[in-house]
Structures are given as structure tokens and as C-alpha cells.
Length: 265
Ligand code: PEP
Ligand code: MN
Image 1: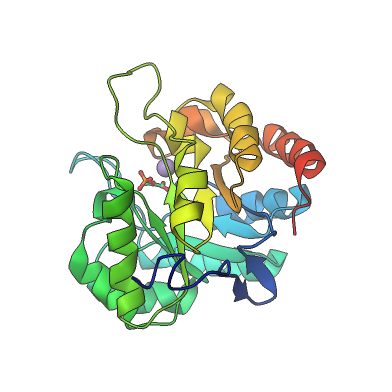
Image 2: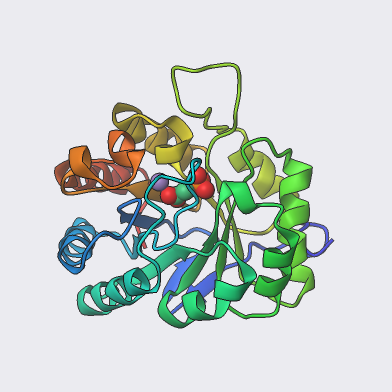
């Protein structure tokens, strides 16, 4: 299989405009769950950059559990985030939910995110395989490692080698946390595959106070990067993810602490 270590013994390093993801590099992606306004994404981008992260995250298309919840602001959000990324010198990552939107998302963002609910949306994966765009593939919340790697295989088999795997927590019997961040996934996936492994302690725990310790644990376990939610006004964020979003000063302090574990390059 193309995703396997046997097929490709060396770590895959994805170079996006000089930012290297994979190997010994540590990449930090930060930003809101959803793009809400030009002011919001510009201010958060400034804070993400000042803290020392390399990538701005933000959803324009949101995969909400219920149909009556805020669904994201769509293409306008892509444009706002692209502008903020450019202005502050950050790469951008955003979620794409359907094959029809792959081209427009690829036009505005540097990395395309496949959400946990879409890990086995095979039409979407096949479409992403036909592009050369870096893809961050999130693990389905009930997916085994084998199912996860097979999902990545769909993208690789289509001819796109630029795939990162993201552990974002799985569903277990525990309800205190939103999900259970499976730290073992990091070394296991790295032993089975050459692809970079990114950890998402925000969705992995659903609780702000757990993001710092689980970020550190992820880096200690060998993660090639983190994707972390941060918001300037989490209590009024437009998705329910304010409760897991760091305040800007917490985000900045986290990156300072992480620098002691591994250089953020
Ligand atoms: C997100 O990153 O905001 C998101 C919806 O993630 P997930 O697909 O992991 O739930
Ligand atoms: Mn979110």
C-alpha cells in the first residue's frame, strides 16, 4: 500500500511555501472553529502569527450535527481567511465537505481538511486524489487505524502524495470528555505509515483546560504537529466549540512551553 512504511521507508515531508510538515519538523495550526467575520479572522491571524504558529485554521463550511445550527459562512469565509493569511504571513487550512467544493477551497486555502464525519466519503477522497493539494485527513471518530489508513490510501491512489493524518479523538464510553484523544495513534500510525501525524487536542478533549496537557503529551508522543482552536471571544463563538477554544494568551503560552520540548519549525 502507498501509505505504508514498507512501500516508503522515509518520513514524508510536505513542503508548503517553505513550511515543512513531517520528519523532525513541528507545525502548529491555530485559529477559530469557524470564520465569522473579516475582523475576527484578521485579529486571530495576527495573534496566531505573533505566537509563532505557521498555519491559520478556520472553517467556512461547518459539518454540524444538527441541520438548524450555524453551517458556516461559505465562500465568503474562504476569501476572508485567505486575505488574513496573506496579510499575516500564514498558511491556511479549511474543511472541504463535498467533491463539488474541492476546487474553490483549493483556490483559497493551502491545506484542505477532511473532517471526521467525512473520513469515508469516498467520492470526496477520490476527488482530492486528483489534485496536488495538501490534505489533512481526520480520523473518523469510530475508525480503526486500518480504516483510517485505507481512507488515506484513496487519496494517495488517485495520485496526490500530500496527505497528513490527524488524530482528533474517538468515541468511547467516557462522557466527561467530548472524545477520547487516542495518543497511541501517534506512534502506531507513524510506525505503520510514512505520512505526517497531526494531533487535534481541541476536538480530542472538548475542554479548554485539557488542551495544554494533551498538546504536550502529543508532542512527547512524537506528533509532527498540532491543530488547536483559539478564539478572541470563545464565549460568543458561532459554533459550540468555544468551550474547547484557547484564549489568545493561553495559545501563546502553550507555544512557548512547546518550544522547550521541540523547536517549532
Ligand atoms: C473542526 O476542525 O472544526 C472539526 C469540525 O473537526 P472534526 O471533523 O474533527 O470534528
Ligand atoms: Mn471545531
